[in-house]
Image 1: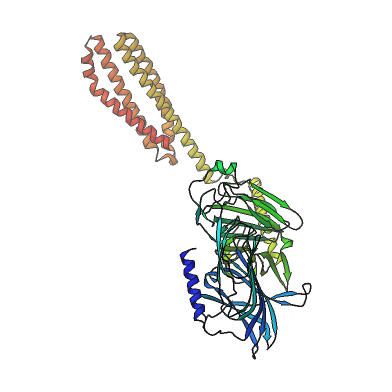
Image 2 (image 1 turned 120 degrees about the vertical axis):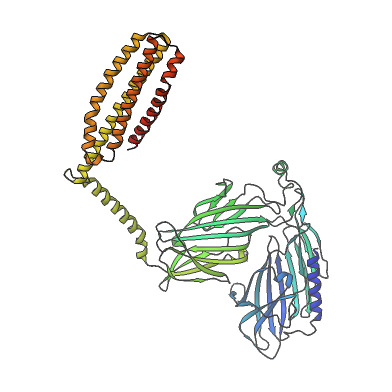
Length: 614
């Protein structure tokens, strides 16, 4: 047994011993029947209390008490009043329950107040049906086990009913998962029958009677706990309710000690993985459709679905078996027909949908339900059968203008007993249904009108307009510049041929061939010069080319200067070969000319690049 649990029990027993006089002596419990179901990870306690007013004054309030270590883990509590006689005529009416002021009662006891349907006068009797669900009270013991060990848990309770009222007769029945029980506290009138452990009956118990018991037994239940669950329920008045559920699940049973062997698990899954759970069962509404099950990696194919007219069951299997302390993340999504969940009442529409998770026996530490209503919904209100934290926010989706109102409901420590229907009331005009179709129709209409105007209208510039004339002149200037560039490139190519004739001269010594090349070059360059004259004249006379013509004139002048330097170099080299001068002497004579030629060639290249950018 954990040290903290032992301390809690000692404090509780000490507090009970200090209560010398009962605070609520007017009521007597003539008969108490308690039933505890621990076949799952949730401890469900059902109590049938027969209350008698033995005092002289009428009583309108009944007090329920729990040990603090149980009260701290209380997830669900409901009290109903049994009316009618006979099993067939009995009906249960839920009563108001609230956490009460524990004044006069020790802090080690949790106190709840039940408002009775009517005041009990002297001698009157009343039968109450109490249902309570506790989480985290089945403690794994040992806390860590190997893959092959069985999963054992421990339950702490009291064989006698803890109450501020005297009890004339009471009995306790504990329903266990199976008959494998390691140990249990043996008291007077204790009986074990298969998987059911009984204590009592015990007679004439004083108020605050308490007899601690501990039951240590095997549990194969899935201790699946959703640390966080976000349920998004999106309502579309076009006929569908889309539900998307994001799960963050952890196994809260005994943690796995040592390594996990996939081989042993596959070969013998029962003895070598008894503490793990391999699947979860989700019970969806009957006409659920478009169901998917996936995680961050993608779709998970290990799932099975069965459906009939009453329900749709989805058996989901995670990608790996979950042992104690292991976690998994996944998403379930499905669609529901709107007509099954949306109704009208008193001028309002209301969505009637379940609050909790559809997965059986799942404990949810934090549940967030987001109900996304259609854009244009107003006067929103929520009706829930239990207390929840609620607020509203806005969500924007496709074709939204003002956004869709979202009702957010939050609750901690949620069990399957909370899977009751909640109602979200709102007003919505059918005219709002036309907003998105009209928006699409208008968009396509304006698109088609724009296309028609574009294809039929003439957007060309008038040939008599100044803009069009200026464009024509500019196009002509650009064409002239391209011709000038082409002629200059031809001149440069001719210069290269003249340079090549000098290299051939130095290799072969054939002076006549070199002079013939000089003569051919002179003829070509004269022709190019004639072609450039009208082009230069056009550029000089065109106002639109006034900022370009100086550069073109400079380009032509530089080319002419380069031509003169090349001719002078050619003459010097040929004369040197005719006089049979040495090669070094010839190179010295043309050295200054060669430097000037290189500089002029670079300047011409720069000017050509400038004009090319224009």
